[in-house]
Image 1 (cartoon, one colour):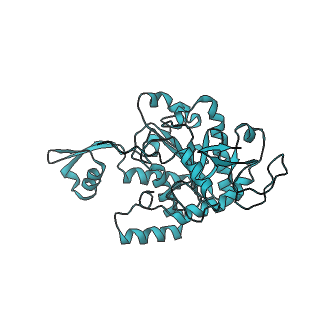
Image 2 (tube, one colour):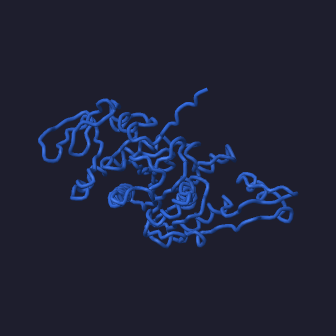
Image 3 (cartoon, one colour):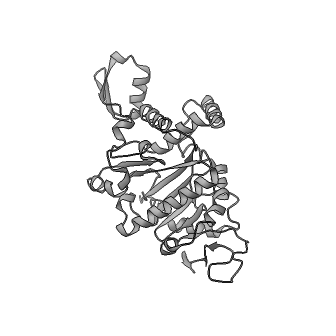
Length: 338
């Protein structure tokens, strides 16, 4: 029996074609592939699933590579320019700081693994100590660093078993193998200022990494430790619970209904309303990104509202069904004609 083909849920072609098919833009309803917001030569930006707060983007490689550490050297400037451009847009729109994070070499979205980075907002006045506290809370909840527990002659390695034993059993009845990791253990395993290149030797040996960057190095980390997926999302969730009373109330109510719920897991909570709000909030700001030598060099293009009168740069043409910044674009046989 033939197995069904693996679905690439971060496919550039799918996002491009499905977004251009929409009758209105931003779309009236969120679907899997109609969330494209902007793109450059080698990367594209989408509104991300699981937006427990508005302003959650994902930056994705057009080329199918498993981590950003493996992109071509000539694309590094483009990656860093686009990342900083999106961070600036998010910070100005929401008056909040941003964090960016990548779980390199992690097949965490199902199907084919395509390199991607997350961008989320956090409170503007959140202290470094509070960020590190949220990182530590997350690491402790995950029992990060604990390889297995031994109890009654049995060796338990599954994270759910480890949690169950350490949360409920008498501490004298089991033995922990490993060391609980905290921020100080992971903050500089790899050079955070040399992301993503400094992870290459580790990746080429088959290793994973997690990159988590705030506005300051002293609350960021870049580690070659192997963690369960969505570490960055869980850290931001813990931070929001500590700093946002309305968010804490919402999450407490959800947990009260189901004690096993995980609001930070995108598979459990999509937050489609916030995904759509992100598009409506950020598209006007993205349109204001300064056109300069770098944006032109990287062929930065933006989806614009259908029906708007838009003057492309260097042209008097106005009005278009769908427009990328400075260029009219139509979907023809799965390709772009400009």
